[in-house]
Amino acid sequence: MDGYSIYIIDLLLLVEAILLLTTIYLIIKSREEYRGRLLLLDKMKIAIDLLSRREYFDAVFDIYREAKGWVIATVTGTKPREEDMPLIDNLLSLMKNRVDDGVRIRLVMPKSPDKIYMGYRYKSVGAQVKFHENLMIYDLRYTVADGKSIVMGFPIEVGETKPTRRGVKIYSETLAGILTRNFERYWESKYAYTYEEYLEKYIEGIRKTHPEITIETIANGLGIPAEELKKINK
Image (cartoon, rainbow, N blue to C red; front, side, top):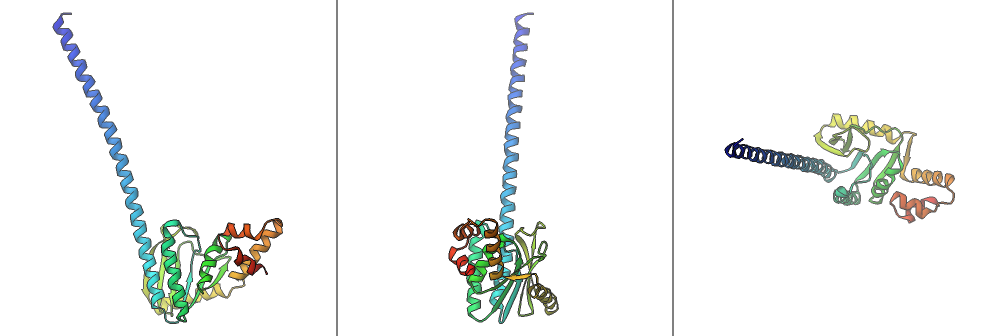
């Protein structure tokens, strides 16, 4: 093989190596772009969820502001996530102002120890709270004011602990009547416990199985002040 042929072969090998490196580079860049798109989509989903949840809370805020005499609601009672705390604090502040204005607020939530924290928060602003063993709020939560204003909340995923992501505000005395009768059925049920009754039963149950446990430890687990438990435990 003469020198010219060797030169051509070397040149072709060089070109092949360059094309191979270029292909590898393009594959790497393509994967980086793909990951970037996934990250962007995730951020867009988070933003849409936050905006939708804010829209739901805005509707709930409106119904509390408009209420003249009373508000009833079925709620999840799930302890809010860190990003939802400002919304919950603002809602609780509004509820306290409305109670001070003479508006009666009654809430029913599922009977579960992890709901006691929000039960305490609602109770502390003057709302009346009951826990029900068989409350079904997996696919619908509602708020009714004065027998005519309604906010219906829906989670994106079915589940008792799934946060409400969509809300619809409706003015309908007929629908308000249906939901109010549904609420009263839970409120007056023998399976409904007031906040104080449920907290007392919970403390008794814990201390029966773990007599050595202190009130402070129980309160810390629930996320509420120990003084609250001591008052109930008396």
